[in-house]
Image 1: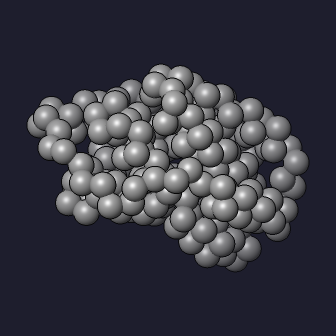
Image 2: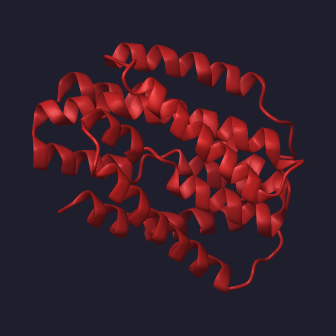
Image 3: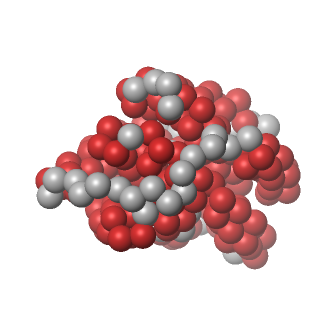
Length: 224
């Protein structure tokens, strides 16, 4: 099974579950659910089966450039969300992600460098997070809203996977972390419900990313 097949299988399910959780419990809980590495973990398993242990090990290390890039993505989007429309926010956040991945990819030489850098950036992000209303009740969205989100996610999956396939193990791991689901959920929330819904969702996501960064990927890199 290819990484593209994994993404096409899991992306719609992930969008549906996040959407349902957000609808029932609020945007922040949708973000908390998004912190689960629901897509990248199966992708890394496929990488291991297709390319072997060494490539897999380097890909896991490479995810830390992507994970740090995700923190920059969240920081940029949330800082702009209250004053700028969603197209500007997503363009700026994506640019920040890509630049950080390109710079950090060669610099993160091992898992410990990746963890240390991630912790520093994460601590700064959480201390400077944009104020927002955590308890905002979201209005009811049209029924077609979910299906447009799914279609948009699948289109983005094709684009990102095609680009990442041209890269080596470090960069492919980093670009596997590109926040496809975060991009879709944040922009649709911003457009449909306003900036607070996006900021609350991203706060829940950022708060619980530490579980993935410290307790899921390190054992994969060390023991597999």
